[in-house]
Length: 309
Image 1 (tube, rainbow, N blue to C red):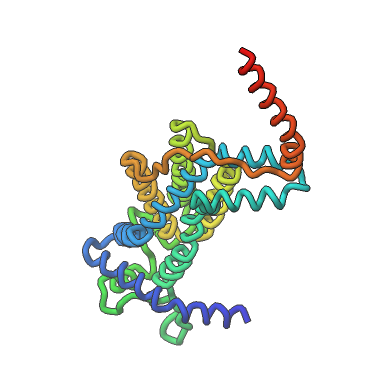
Image 2: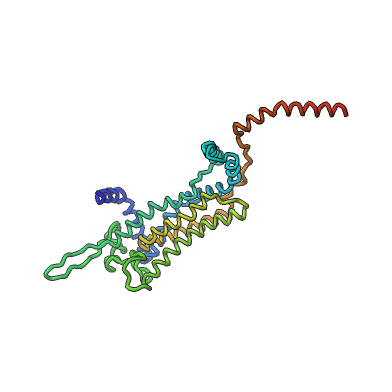
């Protein structure tokens, strides 16, 4: 059953796999280097995703901006009995300020489909088929790359390398825990993983540092997402080919540069949060109603005093 589901998913995404494969073959024809082809493909993908990065960064900055108002609401509606009212007021605040509290994790979530597609394409590039032994030849594997044009230079190079995607001496189709010739041979794969995770943390720190400079607080929910998301992706990096991790490294660098440009140009500056008048609670309204006659009496006394003077 799982195999049939996998086949159905592969059939649905096959045009996308072929598109990515065609782009890789095109860039490889310009400079015959697998790393260069993957980096150029990453640049194309990030160019498409840049509007989302800009929107997400603005959303995170906006969430930091309205933190004082959120704290006021939380202080006013304490306790489990006021939880529903607090949620309603928070949703009203988000709507008034046009803020999406989940915007901070959107880029990470959107990366999922691209990782899946690129993983399948890289897996297809290194595809091999077992040829059974005959009386004349022993059993052996032959390279049969998928998703790329059969007449492309990329196809020719992969077949000649027996399915390997070697860049600077190590196979980009392998993973950190693949079978390597030695412990030293596995080092570049682990370096890729740590570099990808480190860049994700640096990207988050970049936003937090800007918040501190502008005197804004980073929401606890946003801090939790910032801590957990890179750890979750670290696990993924250990089980996917190094070529896909390279994609994440380049995409994180591009995202960091995009955010830096936004901060320098003030594109992400939403301005200061306007002061909101908190809605009165039922007991507040009762106390204000009961004290109304007293306030009127005090005003009358003050008038008489001024007349006497």
